[in-house]
Image 1 (cartoon, rainbow, N blue to C red):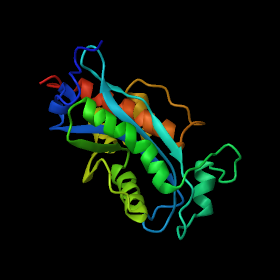
Image 2: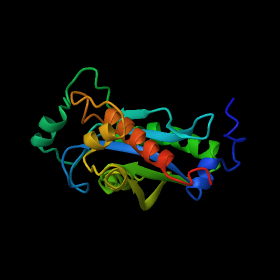
Image 3: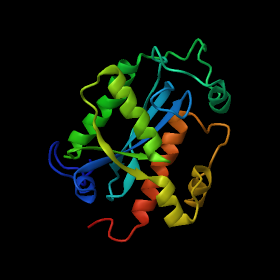
Image 4: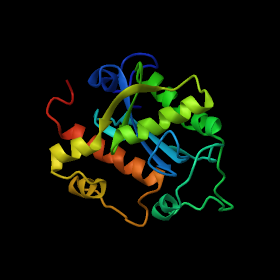
Length: 210
């Protein structure tokens, strides 16, 4: 049993560390760069947790492939970059609302577990991911978005400050983790690596246990 995580609803050290916000690493793969126009194709989330010593660690990953919403566009160059095959028989994509429900549910569970008020998105170029999440929420009329509407933790900034590296692959390697280029640009892989990078920077920061 982890003594650093109190009963459900009581603020944990993680809640106190971030003023009641639960950091959640997020990565989206999309049909382009315009969140108002291009489709959301993949989303992965990794709520941050605590280990027995009170250090930040990535929690369990939740992810979904997403059916492009009606009226959204897909730039073929984006598919070339990500390697996403929209017609793959095992893609098992979900409609936007169902996909959001799938990844939001474990976030809300983690928020409750740590006695937090809501989640805050951790991303590499984080506002890009947040804009796509917010646009998808608005498009399908979802009423239970767990994320802060505009605040984020950006690992571009954290990686630059901590390691002098702003590219995700280089920052992750500078933090002491391996990087597999063949796995990159999938939502799951990039979200998990972003979570590892965030935890490494925060754990190394003086005063992390205050």
